[in-house]
Amino acid sequence: MRGSIYRFGNKKVADRAGIEPDEVRGKTLAVMVGPVQAKLIEKLNREALAEGEPVTEVHRQEDETDADKFQVIQSEHIPLGETLGMPASVLLISEDITEAVMEREKREKTMRELVNALVTVVDRRDPYSAHHSTRTAEVARAIAAEIGLDDILVETTDIAASLMNLGKILVPEELLTAERKLTKEERMLIRNSTLTSADLLEGIDFGGPVAQTLGQMLEFVDGSGVPNGISGDNIIKTAQICAVANTFVGLISPRSYRDGMDFTKAVDILQGDVDHQFSRGVVAALVSHIENKGGREAWEHFRVLDEGAETGSDA
Image 1 (cartoon, rainbow, N blue to C red):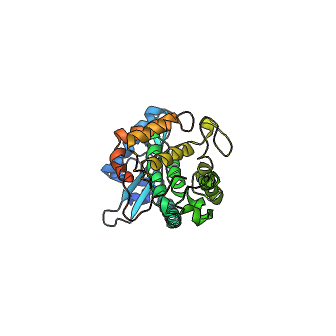
Image 2 (image 1 turned 90 degrees about the vertical axis):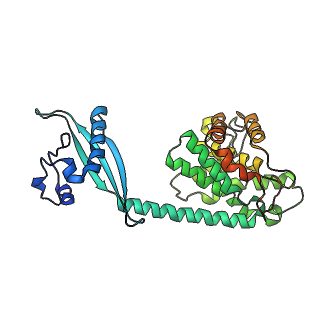
Image 3 (image 1 turned 60 degrees about the horizontal axis):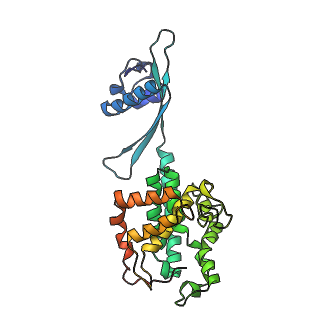
């Protein structure tokens, strides 16, 4: 294809346009795919020629008459240099990946429904932590996006934070609902339930390192955490994020012996543990989201006791 003129097109290209393959040569993009799609393709072709490297684009077209129907086309624009006196051109390879996308979205929907069901089970068994994991997941997702993690790792932080309390299903219920002060051993049992969560989820394919994230949530950046005493960037970023989000939500949430902390005090506590327990960059990303991306307004209700909810002591 040269500029907006086809030099060659296979049978699929011809069939899509309703013509014979030998009629493709010389046709304009606008004639073959319509003016709107032609404009997008020409833009991508120019990028490929300018960069001298292939450019890949995934375009999703929603059905205007049926919200549940759509088509997804993946196109690759490969620049071809000048050869045999022919000017530089672009080889366009397009593929309809609608079925693959539909299958992936169906799988993701099923996984999300499973995660939500597990969260509900934990919340019902441990009324003191109801909503905590869901709120931690919301904060963790925001931090991950603020840092610029890719979509898979953003989703990983969300799922890991949602399921971090799953291990509590193996903690005696009388400890989860106790109104007395827990012993040091009992507090450690509840805290380490995060590691149990990692063990329970090991081997399940979430599309990202969910179990690994949970298994490193109790590690400290200075190496003094558990279970392996790893430090700094050796701790997976998603675990660093979930650790900060978990502590932040715990601080601003009301307890039986105190109101939810204001954001400034909670951030001061987090910053006081920077380079010991928490990553400086992760805490900074949280602060940035609070101050610049609407986090304060979105999460202010975390500080208010939900009607009918219970509050317990920090484990």
